[in-house]
Amino acid sequence: LAGCVIGDGTYLNLGNYGKTHYFGGLYLSAGRVSHVQTMPIFIGAGPTTQGELVQTGGAFTNSASGSRLVLGLAGGQGAYVISNGMAHVAGQVYLGGQFTNALNSCKMANYPVNVHGGTGTLRVDGGSFRVDQEVYSGVEGNGVIAIGPSGTLDLRGDVILSNATTTA
Image 1 (cartoon, helix red, strand yellow):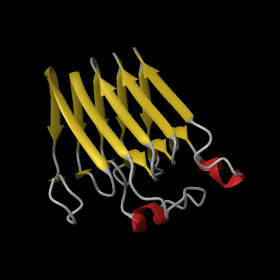
Image 2 (cartoon, helix red, strand yellow; image 1 turned 45 degrees about the vertical axis):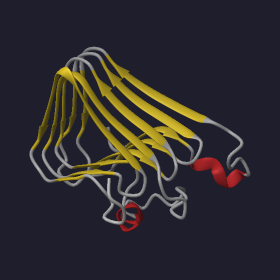
Image 3 (cartoon, one colour; image 1 turned 60 degrees about the vertical axis):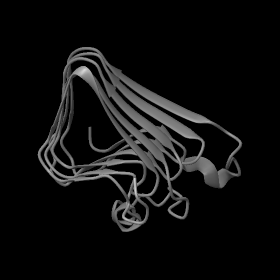
Image 4 (cartoon, helix red, strand yellow; image 1 turned 90 degrees about the horizontal axis):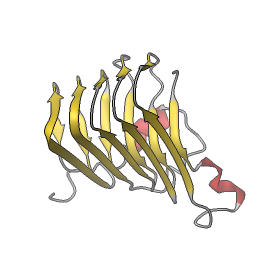
C-alpha cells in the first residue's frame, strides 16, 4: 500500500454533508498486508463515515516510520480490531482525531479540517499489536484502547491519553 483510506467521506463537498453514510472495511484473515510509504492510513475519515480494519489472522505491517495510522478523523468513526495474527506500526497512531497541523501536512485537501473530533478504537482481543512511536488517544475526539485477555499490546513510544484540554 502507498497510503490508504478505509471508510472515506471526502465527497461531503457535493452537498451530501450529514445526509449520506459512508462505510468501508478491510478484513484480513491470512497472508500479509504491507504499507511501506509515508502516506497515512485513515480508517473512518469524515463526518457520517465509519471504517474498520478487522484482523483475524495474518500480518499487517506499516514499516514507514514517518507514516501515521489514524482511527476516526474529521468526525468519522474508525476501528482496528485484532483477534489473531500480528500487526506492527512503525509510525504514530492516533485514536479519535489528529492534530490539525499534522492533517494539513498530509496534503489531504478534501478532508474538512474545520470538522474536528472523531472516534477511534484500537481493540486487541488476541494476537499482537506493536507501535514503535507515540500513541495519541483523544487528540480532537474520543479514543479507546481495549486489550482482551489473550491480546498483547506492545507500545515502544509515549502514550498520550488526552488532548491536554480536558482530563480523560
